Image (cartoon, rainbow over all chains, first blue to last red; front, side):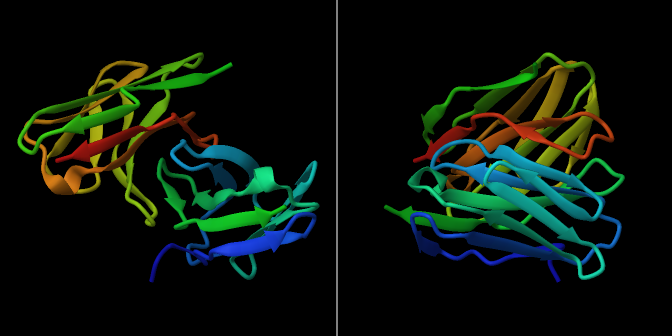
Length: 110
Length: 112
């Protein structure tokens, strides 16, 4: 079983839609949860960061962590064509390693 | 603020040739440094990570090696490239215990 599972998509939505991206994980020791946005041929950019459980909001983006279900989500409100990218979830615990999902490809259609 | 640089941005090399990719971080001290490879349509594969000068942990046995000659410099090398070494190489840094990781712009390597 992989440490982190992420639906690869692709996901295609109309402009203005609410997008929901999700990851599940198996290691209960994970404490830090991240979402990255990666445009084609670029390095991943840290989008959201959450420690432990709960919600975090930043503009149109909301990250949720449910440690009891080992499930994390990223919601994008009022999606824009500029949100078209691959979104990677990532997690870490007390060690030095980070564990990544394979990424979900999102296209927002104008 | 912290900045991470990688070069070159793009590289085309023949099979059997050597490789040297460089990564430097500015604006922080004693970072943890990482090399990943990202193949098309696949996730990030951790190759090496380092928690200090001269300290390298290898995650995948292969013909690549890494070195950390200075606190904020991380180098990925190979003596003889294989076709399977083609991919997008990403350097990243984290501050020990911070729980977040930041990536460089990447190097796209094509081995012909």
